[in-house]
Length: 297
Image (cartoon, rainbow, N blue to C red; front, side):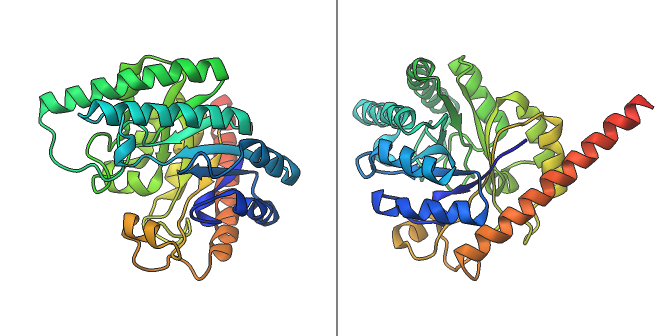
């Protein structure tokens, strides 16, 4: 059974130690898990985060914040080193907090733009793979996994599609490295979302449900029945994490070009999203069961 998770961006941005009481809200809404985005590893004691989640009955996942100074595929060796140090720090933080996955666009930096010629792209991918292999070795020691999130073309110029993400996973060559798929980005970049999900198959380590406008899933034009049917076909058993963003965080609004609220309130979005995702999972379960029965007849 898939857990249903909520991104910490719905609760607070940034999410700090002062935000820990908000975990109770996620549990009150009915969520099983919270994916906590950690921009500053010193802003939360991982042991306190672990205890707060445990007290609420919530599982945890960690998402990194990969800005220009944390780009492991940068042409600046100093930046690559800083990025790797941060990624390794995220792994240590996740292990201490009791999480099992660190997710995000850790292969590059959010906001990386500019056309990469074939040689430059190969070099960036090589640097990313080299550093991700180091991180994967540490993840294995800590019994963690890394989930690489492809971003849309307006946010990154290296990995935009599932196929590109799989190419990088293959270059790293570790079973500890997979993909974090996000329907917002897939809606922009994939020819067919269901086809891409099936192609990713067992390499899907995390899945984020977000509408085409980053609003409440089910309120826009993402083809949700096909999406959840593809997740079932891919035998994805991990969490489905609702991701949206608050409009009261000016740095976040500016970074994401989120110029208007996407819901009446974040509580309303959280509650309605949970109901929708739960219903879609049930429907896909019933459809899958019916298909199996039909095959046996």
